[in-house]
Structure formats: C-alpha cells, structure tokens
Image (cartoon, rainbow over all chains, first blue to last red):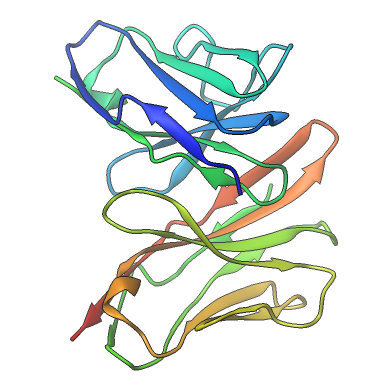
Length: 111
Length: 116
C-alpha cells in the first residue's frame, strides 16, 4: 500500500480565510480522492482528482469553495475557501482504485 | 444510488470475546467490492478487510472475518479474541467501478468499545 502524508495535520483558522491542504504520496497514482468528515459523522467524498484534468466534484461541492490542484502523479492540494464554522471537519485524501488508502487527515477548526 | 447502512451506532465487547458488527447495502450492480475500515482516535483510516462480490468464500484476516451474504446484501464483520487496540470506529464501505471512475460509499459507522 502507498504511504500518504498530509500537511498540515491540524489548523485553527478565522472565518472568511482560506486554507490549503497538501497530500503527498510516495508512489505515482492515477486517481486521488478528497473526503470530508464532519464531527461525529462518516466520510463524504468531495471530489476525485486525476492528473492532467479538472477535478470531478460530487453533488453539494463546488470548485469555487473547494478548488483542487493535481500538478503531478504524487501530489494534490485541496483549498477550503472563505471558511465558516460549518467547514470545521477532518479532511482526508486517499489513493487507489478499488482498495483505497488514506492519509492521516487534517483537522480543521474554523472560529 | 448505492447506500450502505450500519444499524449499530455503538457496540461493546469484553476483552478476549467475540463481537459482530452489522452492515447492509443496496446496489443493483453484480460486481463490486466491500470493505471494513477502522478509525481509531488518531483518525487514521485503516483498511481491515476486503471482499470481492464475485467470490463466494468469506474473507479472513487473522482475527477479523466477514460473513458475506450477497443475496441478502449483508456484510458483517466478526472480531475474535477482541483486544483493547480494537477499540475504534468501524466503517463499512462499498465501491464499484463505473466509466467515470470509482466511488467509495461509507456507512454511518459503529463505535466499538473494548472493556478490559
């Protein structure tokens, strides 16, 4: 399985600001995924990021709010824009086609 | 749409005993994959076990085994000889590959407590 790291591991941000989360994989992968896990809830897919193409967003998530970059086969970023307290969640990236392996997550608190 | 349901928000087990976590899913597909993930307080999602729908044999990984009932769309996880380190949130998940890519759908989770 791939080794996945995320930065930052946690952050506390002010309302109205933006935060960019980085996801680094130790091997080249075609597909990367970004998930949100709100407090006490399950994981929800935000978008799928393929290298060389625009990310595909799930219903309820839009590019203006969650822009994603995928500059190469080992790296991706997710930006949470114009944050509000409702964006306080754990954000996780994952890789894989059938079996998915997850990064350690980024715990975001918006005050 | 594919859905995954875990009807047990919380479960508890005594150390060294056996516990079974339930999961049901809804799909019209015939070829898919099912997983159990474990999320301890560290929040790291750990893949525990996988099952291919086309395989009749139930998957086993050490103390973890599944009971896969395809016709009933049921996928339960049995943990034998429970250990304190098994305490975590457990998520059942479903995936199938479609032309636009694969999507992993999670259940609501079951919080497992292991009592010493």
